[in-house]
Image 1 (cartoon, helix red, strand yellow):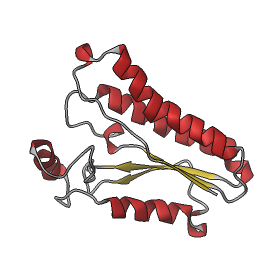
Image 2 (image 1 turned 120 degrees about the vertical axis):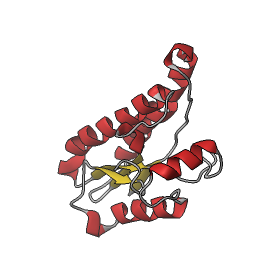
Image 3 (image 1 turned 90 degrees about the vertical axis):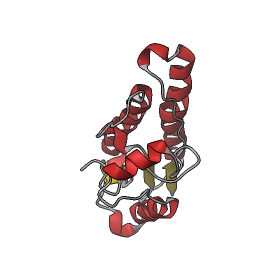
Image 4 (image 1 turned 180 degrees about the vertical axis):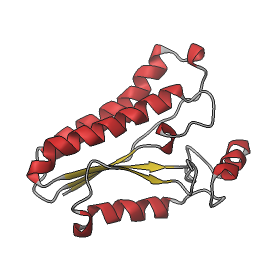
Amino acid sequence: DVLVNNAGILVVKPIDELTLEDFDRMVAVNVRGVFVASQEALRHMGEGGRIVNIGSINTESVPFAGGVLYVLTKAAVSGLTASLARDVGARGITVNALLPGPVDTDMNPAVGAFADEARRRMVLGRYGTVAEIAGFVSYLTRPEAGWVTGSCLRIDGGYAV
């Protein structure tokens, strides 16, 4: 039994320009969605189940302005991960979060001024790929990862170093 919480949205604005609608929408997708999906999955999940939450490296390193709301919601995912791991560990279920750095997606394309700046920060000098994230998620769902729980694991090409 596996749940991967991978939904996320991003609004980049200075805090004084953020609206309550921005706040409510980001919290609904980035936090409430993780909570509700986890709650429902756990109703059916047996021993050896796995929950993998997709957070963000920006909870550890925020090299751009205007990300306060995004960082707040992804930090909530990290906190939820640790607490939920404690709650369900006795059931043999693991809960972990990945903290990706810049990955080439529709929300964060590897082309443009932001991408150029992000690449300069990364030790490996390139954006990550969806396949690299999926590979790490896959590992966390395997029996060999059965002793990994409550962790927020960087996968960021050295972005936060």
